[in-house]
Structures are given as structure tokens and as C-alpha cells.
Length: 63
Image (cartoon, rainbow, N blue to C red; front, side, top):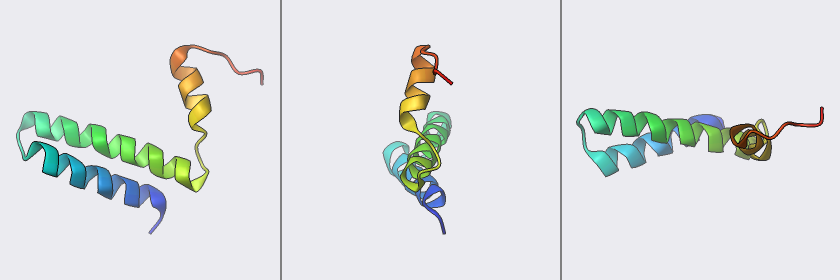
């Protein structure tokens, strides 16, 4: 089991405990699972969060 899967599982657990069902709970679970997956990929070294942040703020890379 890699850290991406662990991140998704933790995000799903937190979302379930936070929202406890409902349509908003489903959308919240998706959000937490996405955040967990991103953090898991970053912990594995497969994702550079600085470049993701730069892309979201509109900065261009030099390469």
C-alpha cells in the first residue's frame, strides 16, 4: 500500500466523520479524498507542491 492510497483513506475517514452522510457530505468526501491524494503524492516525492501552487496562481515556469 503506497502513501497515495493512505492519503485517500485518511481523507475519506475525515470526511465521513465530519459530515456524516448527505449530499454535501458526498461532495466534502470527494474534496477530502482529492486533498489526501495530493498530499500522499507529495509525500512520495511524485508531486512538487510548489509547482502546483505556482500553476494555480498563474506563474509560469522557466522550463
